[in-house]
Image 1 (cartoon, rainbow, N blue to C red):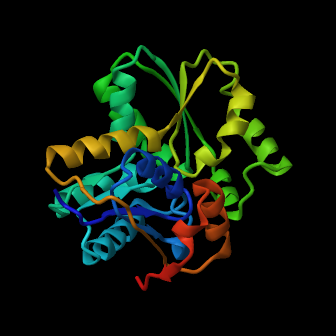
Image 2 (cartoon, one colour):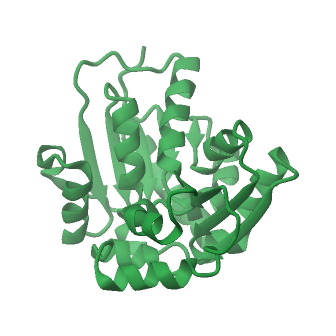
Length: 265
């Protein structure tokens, strides 16, 4: 048993969708969440910048004494995870591998992916999927505006509805089995996406598959916590009120996020 916290890193509020799922599946685990709100968005940055920013975030979490780290960011996972796993001995997990395993164990063979421009440009999802499932049919679409809209809390208004329609209009006629939400901000638009694409296409929230995987990984390494009640700490690199509003709405528990600390990194 190991009662040290899990560290979780994202560029902003998107990782909260992962946090929500991890909390549900791992209710005994303390979590320290770091949102790099000062340097958001990551999706338009170079790979070199993303690697350095991810390293900064991981160094911060390691200083806080975490036992494992979740990169709850699609862009950082696709462009920096492999490099981070070479540098650090601590278990580090991103959002891609658990979802690839989920699809591999299903009968889904026509997959859509929506993500930030940087993630789509890196082709990280395509490479990971094709390595495990060579006969997969993949259609990718960059949705550059969705993450900034989520940071503003624009996830259910007319602007969000029009943006979802515009981004998905080329995917809608395709015979897709599932759509991967390759940016952790995108589950905030899940209801609009479902209405746009219909009920026959499975919408894959990467936080759900990752929450199961982190539990398996902690158990395998004998790192599970035996605490009766978990504690959560939230750090931002720049204070922003929208984070608190989105977090309260998403987690539906104001007591979990009553204080946001400033991370000087």
